[in-house]
Image (tube, rainbow, N blue to C red; front, side):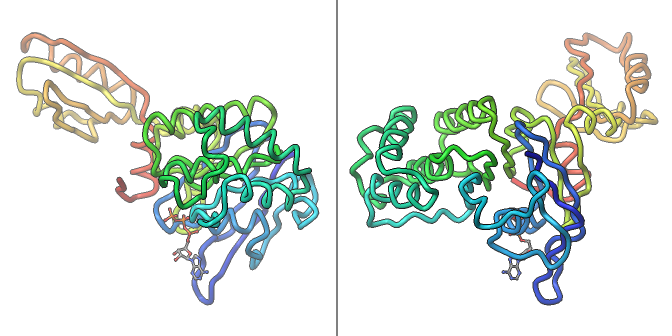
Length: 299
Ligand code: ATP
């Protein structure tokens, strides 16, 4: 059940939103889809689920084109949430579940389970407009997964949620993966991606600039972070050849170094200068990689 995008392009008039994107989304995994605002993530999702036609290229799932007959296997949480404010949660979900081919009784059973799990059983007979934004999002999430899709596409699922709800939704996503769902999600929060995804892709202006397994991406980035805490001024370290970044911290500094070997030069340079509390080499964060590769700062 692999999802494959082969040289997919989308033009809006003269503008190219997605530009020759080829990807293979591994089965039973959570795949992270990243990129600055406007990079083409939502457009790609819309093409995957058939809301938009690709200008060029091919999208297949398990070797077949995705069309209406597959919609029961796909779940989609859109970026712009779209529930009917006047409907009760129960009626909204029954409506959406029926569209996905479920029987009414099964929908109610599943819905009650999910509301229980999200600690809001009392919402069953509330109107959507009576719920807070974050709670509406839980309902929207339920509507994306109630029919147990095999492929789940989540466009910024954690935006606007408080930390407790983020954890609750994250756990739900992990559980779905463990039950065999293949999941693609977009996020601007790198720590969520680091925590959840084995594979990911970073888009820039419609093209993938980084693509692969998180481990491999970090390894091949080469640069590392070196944290030094000391009771003397460390600014001179930024002049050591191979030190490519310097950020002062309240009790020390964070250096970005070209390669692991540079840490030895830094070590030599701080010896006998005073008291050193911390000297720690770390893998680059996805945040470091994103900022360099996607070339934009963001929240
Ligand atoms: P964000 O992180 O801000 O949600 P995104 O990566 O999801 O961004 P898209 O929504 O896919 O980005 O948009 C990609 C580009 O395509 C943007 O420049 C956007 O303005 C443009 N675009 C998207 N839909 C249309 C459309 N229907 N007509 C014209 N341009 C569009």
